[in-house]
Image 1: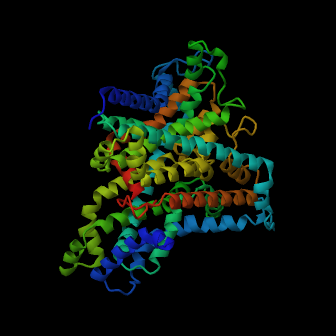
Image 2: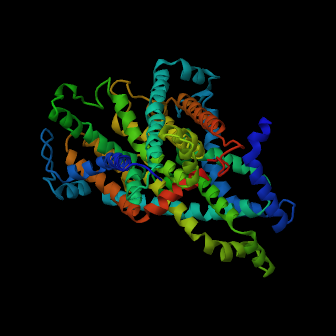
Image 3: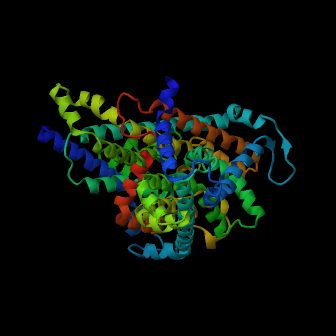
Length: 322
Length: 273
């Protein structure tokens, strides 16, 4: 039963594939088809698969990149979980997950829920503007927000203007405010993407479902939980996958705003990967951390996909695949 | 649907606020870049107006950086699209031995953090003498773009009615001719959307550039130049740094204004597919 559920999406794909091949080609595998796949595969193997295998290999050594590497067993991995600095960095990643993934998805859902109830004017323009943060280089985003959050920036200016001058901070420079400030930049980058995704999902919902809900006397909240939320399952799944991946990687934004500072208050694993590998010459340690980060991302993505997989009894519109 | 006018107006108001928040940082950079140095910041060499742009352009070498970004992004897009069309066609319409394993591998590639590849990539490319050349940016980014490209083109080619291919086959067309003469003409919109997305990702890529072309200014891309420039100039000339940021963002924003519909529907619907 569970396996049947789990394989449903795959099966449909497989059925379509067999039907196609039965009609269009011999049922024997076509070895010459490898010629078509070879160029893409070559790029992928040489520049992605081989480096990953290398990373895993290096992670079991102590190596400065110059002298002879000495086998280190699992000590690099032990350090990932025991080293205070690295544990702190993993903790920061968890905090950032709230800002980068949970908040944008919640804000997106709330706004999308409100939008599902009315006809929206100027949707195209709104959508384009909301999506803007997604297309900007993270370095540009960092420069912009450094200006906004600076001592003499608009945020502090606004606080002073309303008589709350006591609340001003060097937002990215104070120990207490740097991490949440970066978190809110992440929220800003991601909430438009979530809204746009959910809007696209809502556009595919049969309007008669809303009419039916209203005839049954559902209020705005019931309508949201009974109609909008279940129908948006594929979009919520993909929004979580995109935002969580962004949150756990998150090198660019931190590197260009705080570099992990002040002190170690905004360090994240990817910053240590870079510093260990290219500044401190601790290549084994950097590789172990990168491998752990990768496994963490794959596990979280897998869990999200499983948890939000479409159920057979409702919402059969689309498969949930990244 | 019966919803009160008040609710409609309120929702629109919230949406407008959300859009203003989304646009504010870019607007604020543009305003800063045109200003004459904020109080507290040293009056920049730019002295206000477009002077800041001239200063950023000459001090930061952004002309060369924009050219580098264009060279890298266009090459990556063209090569990726070409190999993705070939592989996507085979995976959609042929019995590729090990095809399912390959798709599973590519699926993992879609969510892979680049962090796990950069260190070995650096050593491999250094061994080949390619660090600090365009190749160091182009080759790995083709590899990292292949998963998205192949999935994209495969799902498009699989959606083409088989009758179209049957007809071509009965007319005696070989497999490659079917791809070139039958499928590619109808695939152009899908290829264009894929190209737009890949261009955006490649143009904005930062970590690979930081690691793989650290020393050679002539091949450094626009985001990397901006990072170095804003790091060196931090706090000193906020208006010139802002002008530099606008220069780096401008090509993408212009392209976005033209292509936003294609890009947004591509990214949102492609992601769910």
